[in-house]
Length: 335
Image 1 (tube, helix red, strand yellow):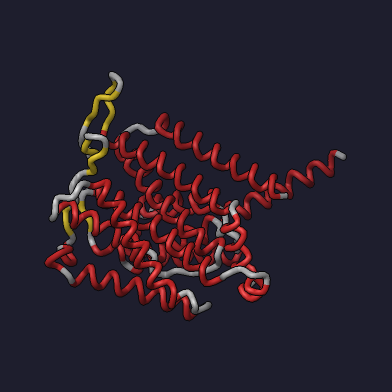
Image 2 (tube, helix red, strand yellow; image 1 turned 90 degrees about the vertical axis):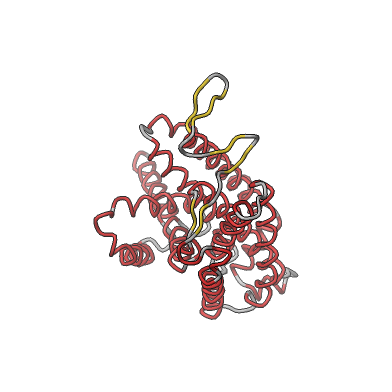
């Protein structure tokens, strides 16, 4: 059973890798690359969130706070104090992880609605702090972010680079960077899921009481996965800030947290490829509903409601089950 599960996850990682490498063949302009880069950033963020929600069963309605902290730490330290971008985003991730550890210890003792409200309050505190400390963050108006310097290159979507005799646009360079990081993020998440830590998280999700009875330190593992998911969010927030070149408090707001959770629920909690599908759909959806921008929140709520009613396990797990049942029925008919 375990070997089959690992094989399926490796097949999923291989499929994701193939998709990342062949997608540029279908892109015709920089806008396509920019959208794909945003999808990769959000998908990697929710891959980390899925470890917390889908595998440990702990809800977080303030996860955009960690995303925003990573973004603003990189923006402030590189733009105001002249730090180098790569060390900055690593230091930011470490500090956000430390904050998640400190905050998570009391918060994760709560369950159900109380946990939801506590994480929601945490997100609000972070967003309000970013919004009010205008002397440092630019306040509601936001602040510019320098380009990402990587191996001597300054990655900008408007630049053109020479690489092995080929000219590569900044949009393509960003796409490859975030595509590779998405694959790496999925690989790390799947290795964690298949490890003893992953089995402990699934036992916590199933029943904390039963897990405690068999010797699982539930508080330790819940806090660990909370920190890991926060680090994912912080790193992607930093990359997002450099990619956009400008950041506002909306990146840490309540709406962004709801979108992240909706991506996980829509795609399929506990399904790594499923949450990536959720990120694809909800990143593209505003583009498809550009004429109905005022109803975007309503559409997100409607999608979440319909998913929970008709596909409670999410899109990918439900579609996989339907396909499996259909193939099984066809095999029985032939027999």
